[in-house]
Length: 121
Length: 382
Image 1 (cartoon, each protein chain N blue to C red):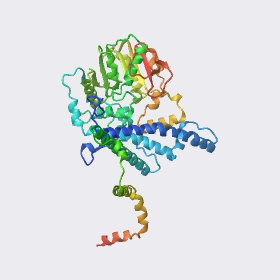
Image 2: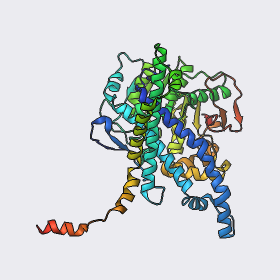
Image 3: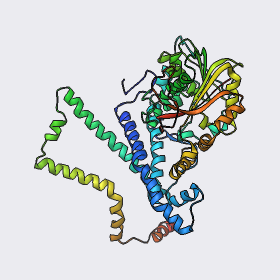
Image 4: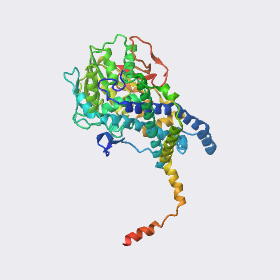
């Protein structure tokens, strides 16, 4: 029952269950990754439900509904904008993978030498 | 029923909080129905044959096979997801409660209460509760964060809806209470208790269901947390059922000898210990009037009826859902324990789960219909 105060006041506290740690994978990285994927899944579920609520509330108040959304046809301009939105998300989510390979394309400096260089000053 | 605030004391949830809670219910259901079965397949089709080939013999116990399961990536993913979903559940409910805790404390102030609440700052919380946060619920049953605090009650009330996935009576979570009375009515169709004690009551999920059948009775309920008791009292008052809550240890209460006609508990015994269990039965006996009855409800699975995967899954509950007495409770010889506590007319068996108890029902004594369809009942007479 440890409560770590967060950055944003009481609503952002991080509560920890008191008990043995539960690392199930060989290394903690996969446990952390799984935890993040699950949290992301729930966040996406919340967003999806919010969109559904928008459609239902709109329809109940005489506005557009799910049927109108389904019948919508994006024109060329809208498709191009959407494509860039999708590209942005791909970039954000898979940045870490691209970063790994980008590193191979450049020659690393000798960072020990750099450290020494500043240290000597 | 308004999902935002299903009863007048329940923490209010906004649109996204409800969506979050429901997504976690579905995730837990997905784990229990879609991934759990795959673990049994993994065990029976791969891990067990490989064990037998490697060692040239059958495994001596399930622990040997659990060790062989642990390197399997499918098993690793499964147990990670089970514990993470549990932590996500308490986080979802906890953040919801924390943002409105001041309002909830105000809501817990009751003018002209019909019942009462009594807290005891000197109560020593038993070590089997305080040693780790049962069910991975940060703050546990007894955590209390100020003189007006109700946080753990609020978290447990909203959390139980997610945890039980609607199988224990939706937002009221009271099927176990109805089932306790159903068992009482099956054994004593004319029973009319005038003083009732519900032990380990938490927020009073079962207590209120039990009290609702006996409006002429005075109902008491106990648990070890001050915040929990304050919330339980406010919840009962706002649902208009008078109950007298007090912060006490069920092993050694401050009630007088022979002061109750009916003593109950709902899935409490497996959260205690091998030493506490006989104490609680002895205390039940001390508190009952001659001829009074005790009815304890417990989880339906019995260890000797479980297959290997269920036992491995049980090890998870013990080690990582922080349920240290889980195995002890489902292997306990309740008949003997009740005899040792001097009870007569003892019955140990399964009662069908119900949302409404009928006097003279015959829903006791058959085989278990499974989790949430049957409950194990332990009853006896002083």
